[in-house]
Structure formats: structure tokens, C-alpha cells
Amino acid sequence: GPSGAKNAVLALLAGTLACREPVTLYSVPLLQDVLSMFDVLRSVGAVVHVGAAGPGTVVVDAGSLSNTSPDPVAVQALRASFFAAGPILARMGEVHMPLPGGCDIGARPVDLHLHGFEALGAKVEVTSDGVVHAMATGPGGRLKGAGRIHLRFPSVGA
Image (cartoon, rainbow, N blue to C red):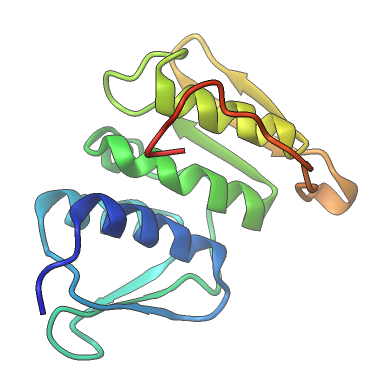
């Protein structure tokens, strides 16, 4: 079948970090951005198997994440790497991640993510050198439901 849309694949790959069971994706285009996302996933302990379930497949096993700080080199190589921050925060109770390359605080995608983390009960700080530190403050170091979240403007990536 046709290759999946790159942006959808990047978001889905990041989302696999929220899953304790292996996830199989189909029709994955092996573009540079996708390979960079594999590096981000692997840097926090996920196992990525390309072609394991047939041509064009990727199986991600994020059952035992080992790290709350994705590799900064992998993160800087890919703006969409910030999609991984939410799943890492949800699974591990904290995340420490550089802002994506060229993405200042207040820029749309990151700003919306950070507001979302806060709405879910995380304490969020951004250091002067551009690293986001978020920590869940709910019971047991977990995030909590937010009820309604109002997005101030439309966003494909939020």
C-alpha cells in the first residue's frame, strides 16, 4: 500500500511510548525524520524493530522505558520529537527535553503542549538554555484528568 503520511507517522511513533505492549505500525515511510524519531524512542529505552512484521512495518516495544531525558542530539534533529514529551511524562511522571531546534518558547506547538501538561497537573519549567522540565504532581506522581482544555488557536500538532 501507499506510504503513510510522514507527520501522522511521527505522531504515532511518539504515541507508542504511552503503550506498555508492543505496537505495530504499517506502511511506515523510512524517511530521515522517521529514522530520527526512532533515535528519540530508542534513547528512552524503547526497542524499535523495522520490518519485523513484514515490509513497511515497524514494531515498537516501549514496555520498559529507562530514561526521562531523550538524547538531545536526536531531539534537535527533529522538530516533531517534542511529540514524545507527553507520552514520556505520562508513563514516567517526568520528562526533561530540549525545545525542538529553532522553536522558541511561545511558538505554537510547544506552547500548546506545555499548557496541556500544566492542565493535566504537571509542573513545567523551561531553563534559560531551552530545556523543558515537566513533573507530574498528581497522586503517585501521575498526571490527572483536566476536564476541558481550550486551545487558543487551531493546531495540527497539539
